[in-house]
Length: 216
Image 1 (cartoon, helix red, strand yellow):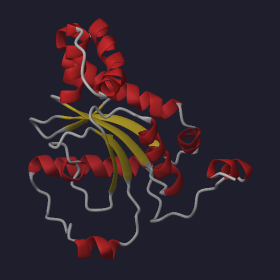
Image 2 (cartoon, rainbow, N blue to C red; image 1 turned 60 degrees about the vertical axis):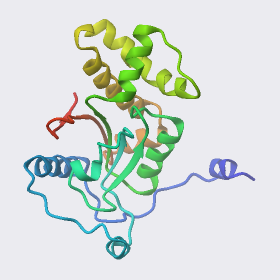
Image 3 (cartoon, rainbow, N blue to C red; image 1 turned 135 degrees about the vertical axis):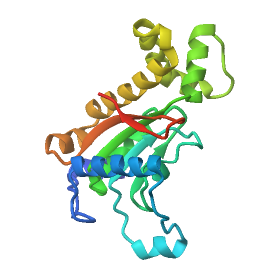
């Protein structure tokens, strides 16, 4: 019997909390307060040594973040969080793949994470490339079409609504689109949302100011 078949026969139930259960609002407040410290340069050094991480022992992140693979956007830094605090799913263009969705479901079902965030950023190269493909009708080599296919709907939407500021609008729409998908396509996440155990938010990180802004 496969694991999928055995799962169908006996419904899995979440285990106990890995740390005192934090509410979604509390988790979001911690992230935004950490971003304020990051911007103000008032944060203290954190212990990222192997020994420090080993002492923590338990894997109990306060948030799972679907972020871009851009090397300039390190969520632990911009939210001033320590090792083990954030579960990161990163892909160029911060779009939700099947693997990313499964990772987010894992965080909700097994780690009791109270907050899921989709984090885009200004000057995103992946979104810029998608804009160019749409505008110039160019073909990209290899598997790059997978990335473009995921972001293109957001570019097309932005083209109709805010063509004068296309990159910004497409970047924000891409985040909103991934948030909508997280809120609608997963029974695992839907059940946790309805019970008030998890919230899903979208945000944009500004590379020039260091500020994280929540999207409506």
